[in-house]
Image 1 (cartoon, rainbow, N blue to C red):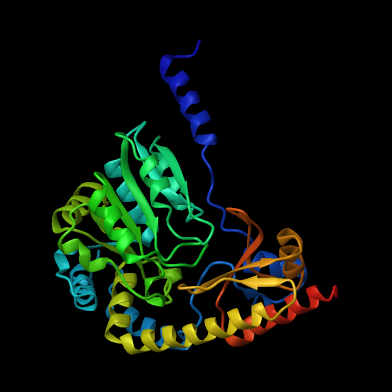
Image 2: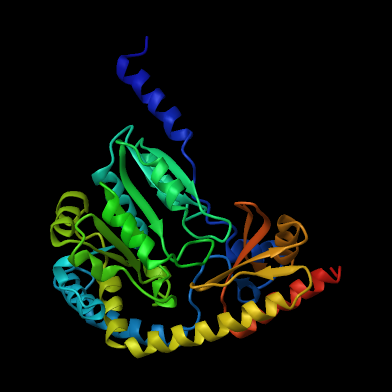
Length: 374
């Protein structure tokens, strides 16, 4: 006979099985093996990574970091040193900042601390799926407010979705996958009018026009999420941070975050890049120029329409089925993201702004597909 505890366990397991998964898609190694190619031949344009900081530059800095670290001991002063450097970078005091293992961890910390079962989380659609995933883990109800057809915020829709149970509002700006940054006045108004916590995800902000980070000096219900995975090229080291009021930062750090959650190597590597910020700025400028070229070239291909971007990726639409285009590119060793339907737009795909030679392979493949060549 089953005990009450066993019944609870089975019920909980059924709930867990129903949760959505975050799919990272095809891996380079897996695709290379399927195609009989070398991993170096695969063109990886599906995860919004930054290839404009040379791997050799990062490897040289990483070698310095490894020489400075003692892996036998827990991180000591590395976190406070990185906070000071980030404070100078952002024009804020270190007390506003917490460090995490990528922006995703801080999304998780925020939902765990501020959401209970049956609370409501509001966000836009389409957007980054991690917000819904994290809300579901807490048993919270996730509510979506669609963007307008031009990808701008529908303030009326957003306002109509807010209830007395709405505790948290996630806003990705610039937004993934639409690649646009929302109007500053509208974001400011949303933060000022909302009674709960507003999390503005600025993962791509270095490629855009402005940041809301300094607003945390005035707005206590604002937390801004940032990452080293995009502009800084450290996706593999999992390093992110947030800025908020000192009280909120202290609460998240001491009440929700586990001790020593970020490695000494990741912390020191973030500091190295801030000390060599010219390397990052140069890469961002090169990427922006290549982004403009890529959008122009995509729009010159028959049957392809690309949208403007304030990120390190480009959303584009095809006349052919996006699934068909995706599979055809996959057979050529080119990885992009098949987005499918966005609002009233069908057949959408997303590509990282890769190095020119990477983008040229994508452009050539799309031209050949337009001509019906296999």
